[in-house]
Length: 140
Image (cartoon, rainbow, N blue to C red; front, top):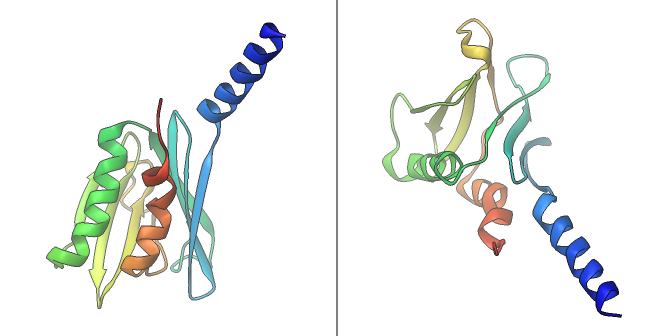
């Protein structure tokens, strides 16, 4: 009986440890999604400048990298930067642009300045929806 209980707890712990969390926010009938697991964070959206082509990028899930994306996304509403905030990840650059109480993500894939994609605009409430799941997770 002890082994059965231990096995059940191990399975539940493993499921929680390796599970993915996906939060999506809808903007003008378009979806922006943030997906996280223990190793990677992925942001994907239908690019408004490329016939709604679904694009995205991913980066290693560290406290600092996830926090930077979250922090600067929210800071844009407070600071209202004219040129946006640029974040550089392993293979991609992302610029968080502010305009009229919304933000958009400008993604340069594979550090190629000719390959860029713009996300739909998101309100502050929609940004909070994207990052909600990780704020609620309790890590053991």
